[in-house]
Image 1 (cartoon, chains in turn orange, brown):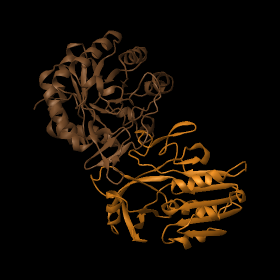
Image 2 (cartoon, rainbow over the protein chains, first blue to last red):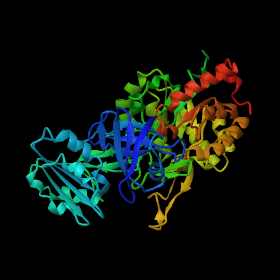
Image 3 (cartoon, one colour):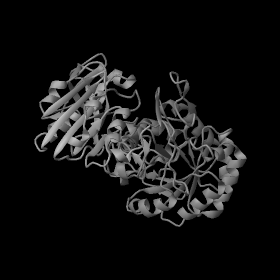
Image 4 (spheres, rainbow over the protein chains, first blue to last red):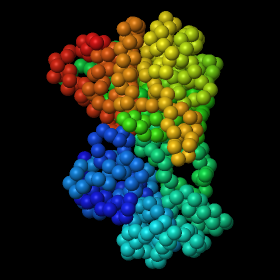
Length: 232
Length: 300
């Protein structure tokens, strides 16, 4: 059980929640979170947005009962976190681009913070449907940053400029990026999203078929090499 | 310190808490979180003779006080289980229950024969999975079909055999009696209730398989009633389950007639819940001055 430091409304339906405590975690990992006792039954998987001394934060969009309840929590309310779970992003090197679409920007802030000192180039691409959010927080870690509102962020991306692309967002966006890869050297890592129950790889409700067989998004993922995944 | 030991037929459990099939994998993931040897037993992910990929499409849907799943018996197959998981499980100090499912009688028989050569403590025959179109639950609806499969399986294994029953059975008491008559060593109940969820925007079912299995606290009162009804009509022991979220629920199931209890959906909410249930039962025994759990099993 931990205490909420703040639960800030970023837009109509997006929130930034910060929780007190020294929580471990690697870039791209997630926690199972519940801000209630018994109901809703399941916890919600949220990827790590930022870890600081004495706090961890997550961003989320209000989509259903659980995130609606989360959005109503206030400073000093209790919240339960299990984790960190999942494999997370690899330690990218050289020229690196982070590409986030909508809520998919969530795991990329901590990723940028971890990578910007060790890589040669760190560019950040952020695509939004209606309004740009949190852009300045990301820009501090970026050599170049690219923003799109209402259009495809991938239109601005030339993947041949990079050794690594780390991306998270809507599946059509991820698919467009993976399809850009032809014979070039760029390694594309994608973070996938699925409904989950246990979060640790036991229940198999988030399993999907990859080119290497069945895979558990919560345990074997959520990060995969782009070409391993079958897109819809 | 209370003695939580129970005898389930010929098999001794150090405590009555077992993790339910399909919610605990083969134990590895939870063993990273706590020492699973402190549990009474583990019922493995449902195994079939051959590897299965499981169902396509959405596999989980939350409901008021419950969840529906449509995993569809994704599993590595019996041979892979024996080679990769049994060595790990054998080193644990807890009872291992191999949960076996199938699509045809022959498939069940072959899988059970193969498992029976291994060092597992019991077989739990799953005739109640609602998520596999061609079989599983089909064996657990009609009493005569269930009777036949238990009779055939009994011939091919000397391992203690428990039959996992479906709450969707046409007459769960009659099926339980048939299992007993055909030589089953115990009954586990209940598997999930068959349910339906609809996506009204898409005007189609949430699950590709249309119907899916409901578990969690929503089913507890019905599961408890079924355990009690079966307890009154059979003399072989029962492993009760269905929405057990805490030690109080576990005690209720024991009072209703369960010798052991299985914890399923609750593992997802708190990965250490089964351990907490063991502790809760110990504390209850101390507080109530209960020397043996036999004192409370089936008192209702």
